[in-house]
Image (tube, rainbow, N blue to C red; front, top):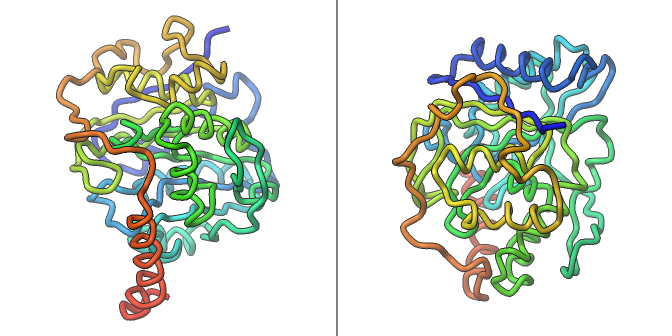
Length: 320
């Protein structure tokens, strides 16, 4: 059987339009069986890299999160939590800046930081630990933002789950791979395989191009995409953005590890009958690639800035 990917052109962050897409995607991918059931506990994993307004395209747009909350509420799930591990600052501050706070009152969404690190065995990389909180949930919904990435070229479905690694363990893992981007990609694939989200929905209505994942610029891609198969999803989106697949290191890692569907001919497009019309030719990648590893000075500055953000800046702003 071919691996299905659902695509839909959506030009603005209209919650009703996004909710319709989410509901249709859930029905399409469920193949007659509900993905969500009454009483289940569901975790949402957006991209909350750091505190930023929705217009900056650093984080998953709140309209996407709200649309998913509506569908989950209508499915009768008993609990909806949202978690991530920002690279800078606290989760509470990042969620407030991203516009998620009203969703807590509106849908009972609980915003809770990842904790309880547990070891995960992966290929050739020691010391990898991810959040043990994942075991509390019946379903995980992956909600990445479509962004360029100065180290890994693109950050999409598979890469977004790196946020399940807690706090400053992430830059340390960057260094342990000794600037081998395919090796780093294999670690990301192992994390994705372990997390095993039941559904991934990519926010590509306004993407980030250029020097992402933080310092890029908004790009109107006008697209939402959904799938269960992370590799198939990332493969299609790379093709739509006109990015050579060999430059998307995590996809090469997925191919090597036989994770998901890599072959375009084995992917079934749903939603847009003429999906080739979605391809763009002017999506810009980073001006130049950066090494995957961080030098010790960068690591020290990153730790110090993280402490400053949480310990002083957020408190002075009245955010914690």
